[in-house]
Length: 501
Ligand SMILES: Nc1ncnc2c1ncn2[C@@H]1O[C@H](COP(=O)(O)OP(=O)(O)OP(=O)(O)O)[C@@H](O)[C@H]1O
Ligand SMILES: [Mg+2]
Image: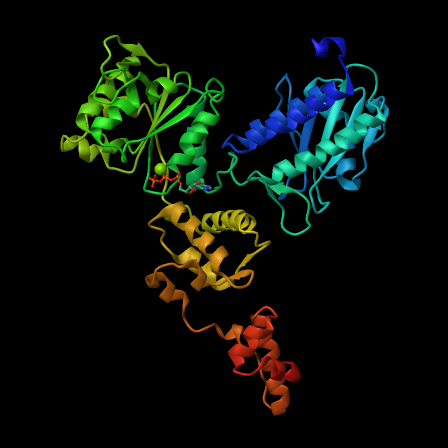
């Protein structure tokens, strides 16, 4: 009512703008496709500014091009603008806000984009996206205001919004380029899922395809490879179901008698202590996703009931008489060798076939290559350094070597724990091999005596005092300037050390 009386009251505008940012918070926490996230962002910006369309361009770390993530219909392919090209390129170079009444007449205008999109740019407002260190990460551009031209308030608003976008992007796995360099790089197509190796690309494709259907998915792979993460990604990227619940059933933790009522619910009086009707997880997942984690652990009696659910979506509450229906998409995961279990009669063959309509095997970490291990390490390092308030940290060459050599039987989870442990235990900002807490077998390899390059070159003919001075300086550098540790390592007092510098 209020909205109709005061269609553009500043208060309502403000609350619209606020809810725009709140929505973003929810999106950012999920394993959604980054492109979906960025286009959701652009659509909301267009709406808030009463514009026909908004485009978010990000500076690509590798090529320095501006890469578009376009919003509203018609859906068009990605636009890549060479650095400095067009109004967007100009804004990315200069950091100025550009507000045009008739974009097509501006000499900086790059008409190729309109030609490709079949769109006609008239009014156009473009602002830089700067992160907290003021580095330009991209550009946001809004086109064709519905009512008149973009005002100076619009300019200020878009700038403020761009700052929020920059901040929001920091909560994603779109990584800013190193140091003060511009740009961002994608660590994988899904937010919070890191990986760019060949075997992971194949997984992304399968997951993206599966997410858009209702098919039952079986996720396989060793412990700690990310099965839980991908189950959530399937849910979050399913347009039809993402807004509903993802309900997880951990098949390992419950005895068979309890799991049945946990899954299907029970009627009042079904058993001693059942003093009211309880809705089960299958029912809660109606129109959403039911994630059966460690499905290989299910007892045979429950397997039979599950088969019925998977086959015709029907089930019965414990103690109930009428069959119920649930339209839940089923995602199951296991690290067990289900074929062997079927052969031994421990897992129902018919259920196995019903579950593996789409089967995705997530490769172990050791099959993804050293580069991937380092990419994941950086991701966890940034995440835990922030969480434990340790600022920016680094991994020493020795620790990197150890990370690359280790064979990761516990996969990504083991790596995540090793990095978190190192973040907490390293006395300086530099992580050394011993902070990773990896087993001795692999550590032994990197505990070899330091390579000669780590020493200090002392040509013959120096005075002893000079030898001492150079040796002290090299030790100090190795200890990152930490005087106490240097003194301790040299076996002298801090005062004496100061006199020797
Ligand atoms: N590609 C990835 N990028 C970022 N984090 C990841 C990735 N893969 C796994 N992780 C993290 O590693 C941990 C283990 O992942 P997850 O629990 O999904 O493994 P799992 O395969 O379900 O293991 P288990 O079989 O033991 O249950 C989680 O904290 C998850 O967030
Ligand atoms: Mg799991």
